Length: 267
Image 1 (cartoon, rainbow, N blue to C red):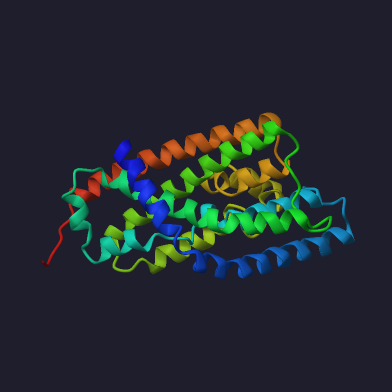
Image 2: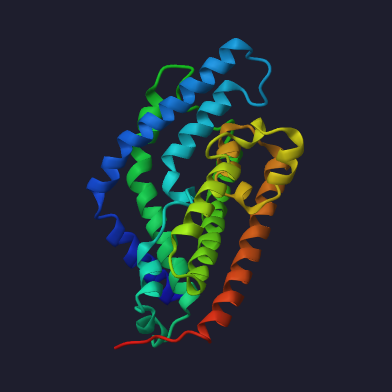
């Protein structure tokens, strides 16, 4: 495990150097966050009692989404992994005495975490000092906050494990654009990135909440806001554990199979 932690640390530190790129994206995230909050506020003013989440919960959900966008957005890709597959650079990784799936998982998780660290602090600071009802509220209790931290960690694992399946699929494609677009659209919508899952019609929500996408952004953001608490939060965390284990197992098996058939041409 030490070698994977070392890989994680190296990629994490290297990604922290791109501060200017992170700051450049903050204006977009603030604009998107305010746009979503003001849009929901207009609907809540018409009939505040007809929505499945309190307005404060919805606001907190949106700010958590924007603060930790780099952790949960499926359209944040590690281009180094994709390029190594498409241009044959993977040959250098194959001769190293290290499990390729573990290496990719470590680097992808580190890159996402470093991006989130650079962006979340200013977003959370501004969100906490905004006037009510547009500010980010604190979790209902310390236990709820602890569950949020655990759920966020598991959610990051689920996102990375799912992204690993996308990277592995590049061995079978000529261009990564098609599958990336499909995963980006489906993942963003089904994880609550466009509309929080409680706003979905009940029959659709009951199915969507069982999918791996619901174990990404949806669960940590709803636990933080207080929309999910108690046994429901624990059940959601257990579902995250299941999807993390299942996706890692599937990804490991697929990568082992495909790497046995890899042929690198050129020199």
